[in-house]
Length: 114
Length: 111
Image (cartoon, rainbow over all chains, first blue to last red; front, side, top):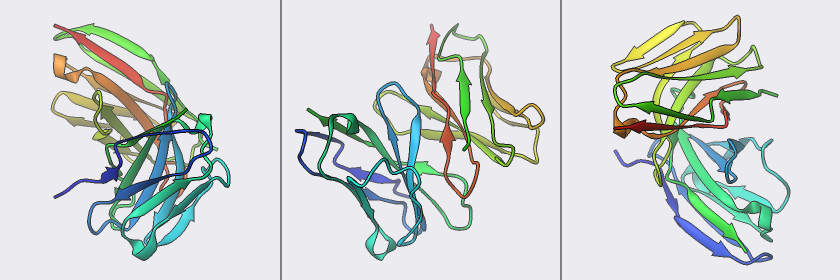
């Protein structure tokens, strides 16, 4: 079974630019989560999709972040415009609807804003 | 909201020794506690988890204990090996499906 995949693995952009991160969950997993780890700190929750609906977006830092999951399959997270403090590793995770607890993580996208 | 504290932040042990990592949580509604291992440059990998109706769970060399009254849970690794070297994260599930993570423990196993 293929795991959660994320693209790109690394992204370096300048302050003010736009970046879009993509996550492909494990096939059949209705629950999709975005998390972020800023250097040296804990992994923090950003938001949770159930299929195409946003279940919880309480962790989104501000309106520069926009997440979508059209059709309930892959998800994108867009940062526009990017700021220096957005640098970090963005993780995506998915879990099957029957479980709702075990979350399987992708390899992450390392975003560097200069 | 939920707050998870993890200690120690770094832990160095000799190969063959045991390692213990401890976490405390604040929200008594949390009922699921996973542990993740992240090797350098790789994804966080779920290694063991425990639910609130169980006090202890073991899987080969790793075990997790949970004390709901005291709101703390611990990861125990016995007979450590160099390949156990990684960053370990504890987490708690306070509401819905989101996870709240501890700050991580960098475990170094010296051969």
